[in-house]
Image (cartoon, rainbow over all chains, first blue to last red):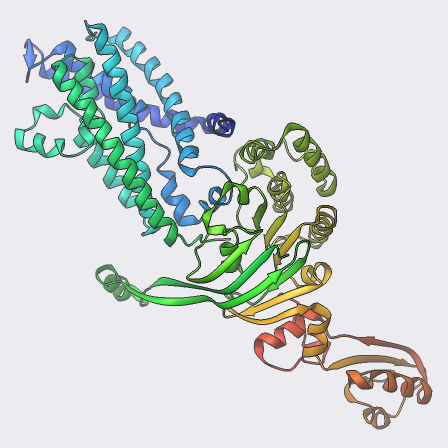
Length: 265
Length: 338
């Protein structure tokens, strides 16, 4: 039963390897962001012990962690779903006994695995070259909590992306929604800078969204800046968001499929 | 026992209407206007297991929309569809394992990878056992001459090669019902012929039920005993192809070659004279009078050669859509599809 998804995962890898230049360009983009953030923060913290309650090693770890989480959480091939709906390519899945959602989980996982391997190598090289002092958690339980937070973040992002792709059932404009959604999500997720350096009212507003649980929350777990109670609360909020988004995906896709025109062909 | 049952099927779409020009685009940005399009209207028919039926109509007649409802891609607005006892829009795996839909302009093959990879994926998706998969690949490779094509990335294949790989990939799970939408679209005549041969062979070997749409009347004439004709979503005809010709084309064409020049006036008394060109003539004669006319010609004229022809099926069907009588002359025939 699961064999088809394993094979779809493997085929996605093969396809990714066919498009080496696209993959490399994506990595260069991500690496450029990392290097610019590294120099921004080292300049800002020059001659200071801390900045907005972040020590140098903590803020650099945040920057390197952002690089890792961009690869692991914020990377998604499932954005292609919107054009699949618009072009009618979705039909190929609807005709066959395979879950479209399950299929796209395999495609996203393949994408994330490749990005993760690349990101880890890049971080190792940069840490060695720049001799950056990174923050490593002192408590063993932090690693477990971080792992759970990453899992929650990946699931939330996938569901958000799959949900947003359902816009294809109602509009044929795929570029605009994606660009807007991605930028807003990265900003509110803390994928450019930690969101607790922003005014409190804006922070509170962001916390009403699922995005802080994608990057900011997992990295704060890693940096051991949260008390145990806040970690448990954060993980619980991730579960709530996963449940809410899964329900929304089900409802929206069910309605969307009734409108689906299976264009082309 | 029926394989496919369509009862009072209706499908309407809501489509966005845009006025022409920039002004229309700006107005559409603020205020969208929609209109309802009726794609299929009160359509009913049944198909028995093992039948190979041609489903024809001009562009926009509702053929593909009907096929999409039969395969579960679209939900009917009204009416009922059952295929092998299932309601297609429920998209049950047990149903999906028993049918396939091949769309000439759509592919399920992975574009960047060899077709073989898509074959393996379909094997897992349809849970085809190893031995059955091996046998089916062998059979399809022989029927479709696939040797050497399956290891090449799909994007490098020609249109004809891709269509053959597409057909094979769609049949690996041994489907009992096939919906073929324009299976010969864009193919050269040799490849069209091969695909047609394959469809006939598959229908006979596997007793599969096949519903085929095509604008290529050679496909229909060569493959289908029965045709269902629709236009503007309405059923126009459902019956044998031969009956269609006799019902809608009341005349036959007699072509005669003579040894010596003849009196064309005497010839015109036998039927409507279409052409008279020296030693050659063509006469349009009512069906019931064809035998009598032929024997008169042979008895009273210096006939060297005589042939009796049905009007081409393409011309008959075109006359149904245009509500015009079947034109008699070959000279008026347009060689393209409907």
